[in-house]
Length: 262
Image (cartoon, rainbow, N blue to C red; front, side, top):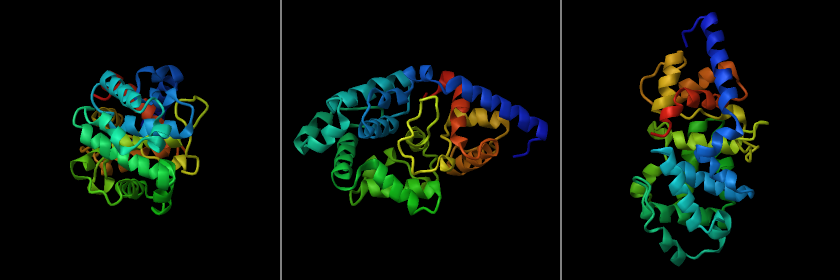
């Protein structure tokens, strides 16, 4: 990062100011994180957050509408539904569509989530194991998480809905989901449910809009929005806060708020 000391001070002031502006509960009403905020049970928040993050691309209103519909198809009790429903009941998801995430994708995700919660301890357990096996490499942890999620199921076209940093994907939606689950502060936006994962290890979600803002600030030089760019951006954000670099997702969001998820 080729910034002078004076420029670093100005960037820090901007990031801290925008973080303060957007890391607030009144920010979430029209954001995908509002979906898991509807629930109190840890597992309901994990599951609803994971499925909402999975379909978080496109216009925000469309994301919220379809995530709400998806939760309704789970009787608004995601955890209980996964534990108690039979495969015959999953046919209700066959007509679900959000952009390229269709009914067959949805049913495969239900199959895997049901198995994970019935037999593997759920999303928290498999990500914790994936992270522990990664030696602190979050890209490897996410890749391991993906492998554990699909197991022996051949994902085919459905696999594209669960990004893999080892294929140099920015994995923006997964990084966002992990921010929701791992981060905690007194603002109450993120949940901090997975406290055994260090906040310092989180990677900043990166898309075309946050990338544009980051490059404008001089904290990202790589032109592609890929995992190498995520790594560069997150390392630079650790200069400003080594313990909680991902809090600056709120600041980068602020810079592209009018276009977020488009």
